[in-house]
Image (spheres, rainbow, N blue to C red):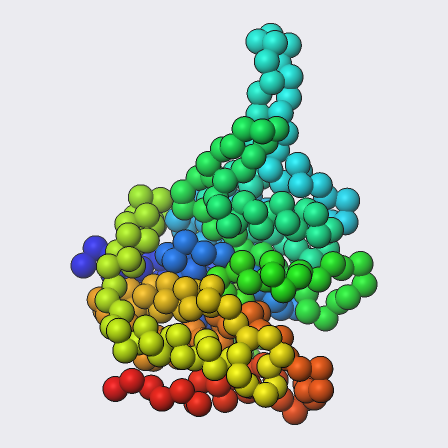
Length: 310
């Protein structure tokens, strides 16, 4: 099938640069296929920027990186209108948000006003510049990053804005052999310079359409609803996930089924992305000792509390 060739080319090409992180790559591609955006929260140096650049180069897509700083303005992202003396008219000067893949680096280092400007673009794929609305290119995919261990000079994303991200993932440290392989790949050249595009934008749009045809049974629809509702009744969770979480799980589970070469969703597809779709959408009670009970453990308890349809 054509879509399986496209998917295989995507994964294999990115793996030439990103070593030992096939699950992260699949989650990234699934979010792209689902027309969503991802938040990567991890320490510096683990390949967040490299992952975004590899994906953009693999797809032959326009890539822009925005370094978020406290003095960044919303217009620095979206663009402004500039007066053209020749035509005596104002013309739009588009900002870096007008790209297929946008890396929003260290999104928590800018002010809430600028954060809101970016997230508005993510929600509607529209940008308004001086009263005129423009459509963003398709596909449009934002990879935002933030460092979880630094708090000085940062502006944490409000919970309502965190909810706009389809998935929150982490890359994690590589295994010993993988880390050695990373060094070997960089002995002479940057592996990013050795890959070329293997997929075009039309093929990505095709995958996005194919994902809409993936079958999700009524039993699994109820399963998704029940596990999301269970987060609202767990004693360790102060605020459970919203209905947007149901939609996120539905969209990503279908994309994961497509990546696996199936035309239907299984319970394992849902279980495999449950944590990544919900960890940024819940708030724990203040009495929780984070060393004893992590979000992952609590969400595993939630998942186990709901019967899996056979």
